[in-house]
Amino acid sequence: METMKRISLYLKEVFSFNTFIQFYRYVLVGIVSFLTETSLLYWLTDHLNLWYIYSNSIAYIVVFWLNFLLNRFWSFKSKQNLSVQLVMYLVLFVVNLFASNGMLYLLTSVFNVYYLVSKIFAVALVVCWNFIIYKKVIFK
Image (cartoon, helix red, strand yellow):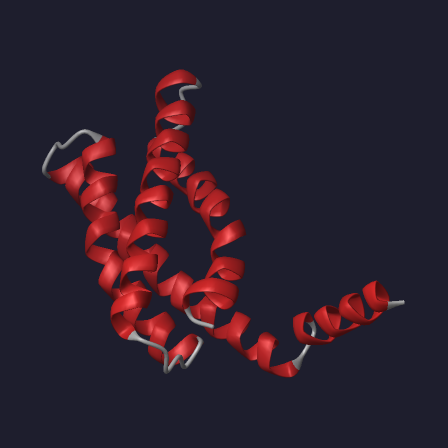
């Protein structure tokens, strides 16, 4: 019976209006971040002739601050310790960067998918776990 109560409470939180608003804002921040990051990736790769993995890494680092600040202050309206959140966000950022670059390399260099199309799949991979980690761990 205790397990059913926990499941019920969890489902109420997951499907609450507040979670919906947070998710909506998270998606909007994600769209802004994606457009900024992808534009930088394209510009660095096609106009400065950098290798797409270098371009992706640079774009990812630039967008790091935009994404962190918008999610902290707008999406999740967090009031927790900024330094602690920044360290946790940085750890997740490094994991995401390696996952993104790995997916980008695999799809582009191994399967010959155009690098900007590969970027879409890499972003989809990272987005899947980020909202839950942001909500439950970093910006709680």
